[in-house]
Image (cartoon, rainbow, N blue to C red; front, side):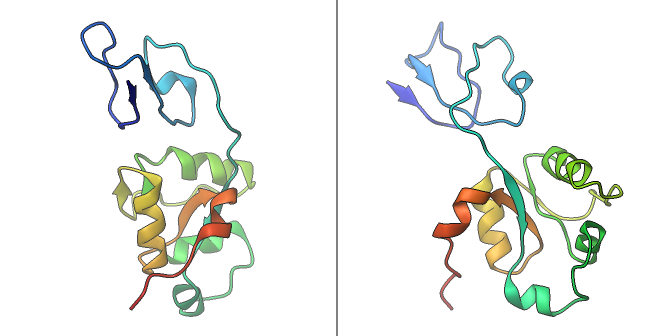
Length: 129
């Protein structure tokens, strides 16, 4: 059996033989063997209507004019701003979602700026209605 849930699996007492999880670091899943499956490059995205409602984005700090949407915790935005050479942003603003698909849906609905995998953007279409 393959288990692709978000919770940590206890292999000794459970039915799963393998569990597939995603994380920014290998330390997220204690007591397990970790192997990377794919390289992920995160990029900020915003719904066009929300972007048009504020100032132009000239530098990474300009993202602060909108709520930042988070996947599981603030760690991804902390890493992105550091990699972009930006001043630290106010990470306390914005909702925290259980997974990236929820961040993407909230972003498409104009709830804020999300971070998504660069390869995901080719498959995005705005929600109907």
